[in-house]
Image (cartoon, rainbow over all chains, first blue to last red; front, side, top):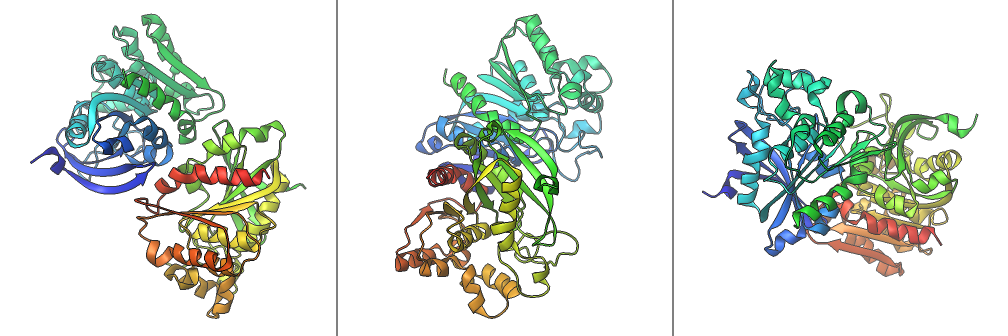
Length: 283
Length: 283
């Protein structure tokens, strides 16, 4: 049985000459069925292996939000980049959950949980870094050239995963990332639940801590809305900027006046991110 | 009291240098509170009056679907066109409804209902043609240059409204319109309820019937997905094509192989529609 037989088609739509497809598959590391979306640009139909941008979404999202709202596929079709959007947590009736929108389902925070009851399924870090790319690369006409990006909780995920695995990615970027979760309410709540009270274990999931200690410099671009309601308390781009300064990390960080936390902001600047990744993916 | 005081802000988002805004207002012709969305491109902030594209959405939609999913605002920002997206029916607890998704709320079909209980609120034709543009033009920095477009039920609405009011619009367009509702299941169900059993009254809401009799030729562009599940039974573009041929109406109609009925199709071709309208709005 090839990897192709391990996934099941959920939906198919033609868009910008390529194909948006949703699949379900049984995840071994998450221990549950998962759904993901992939955009295959027109170039992928010509027997050419295209590079892949992994997109990590924010709290409450699924594989659908980015594909429906970001307006990314127009540019991906032009540049010949596939986009893969995983879900934001394990799913299913037997998966632990919480009443809050910021913990449990829809809020996996891209960590490997060590604490019960979360550790049975919440292994999103391993899923995004290893299991999903292996499945994608065994199934679709894609190369092993990868970039990673995301929004909010997913921006945190993209920066953490990129900095901890610079050999696996050509570049990373983020919109409105949770830059310093160890001091942000969202991060403290999630990390306490998933990782426990020992804050030493939190450091490896904090973009600012990682950037402060980084010696390898993966190309990175961050955009943040200046009118984002979560800016001061939850997102803290100034912590990332200070870390970059301390370690000499060449961070591109732009604050855009008037823009908020929504997909209206992401859609306004996604083209810049795709062109940034295309430049590094082609090297 | 100016018109500006008659509307209430619901939300504001910056996008592509302009502003997406949602408002609620009390509609006189619909006899209920209504919500609409407007995109004001950057040019509208410079004291310049910009033209307006009215977008009519399809069954089950609100003012939000097009604004979130079509990717239109990037091009509208470049071209300096405002976009107004009304809701698809009257709303509220005292508005008549039906169990089906294709009748009642979310399914106003852009007609003036004559039959009880629908005639109390379902006057979407007058709302879109007269009341809403009057409000928009009294409130926002827009000119009286108008274009109209829509999808599916909204494509039907755009073609009908454009052909019946060619003096009010510079151009009209549609994605996957219900071209011949008097013979389509959706149209027959809705028109029977809203207009009654006398089919003579249905003719003035049928794009193919109007095109067959038209003497004024408003510029028109129609795009249709070739893999649209509703193509044969509900949409019938061949009826519109036959009508155009019979009356010499210069119809631009393109069938796009592989595309379906979704916003993935609309987003792939919305730029062409905006440039088409911009050309005629600038005349």
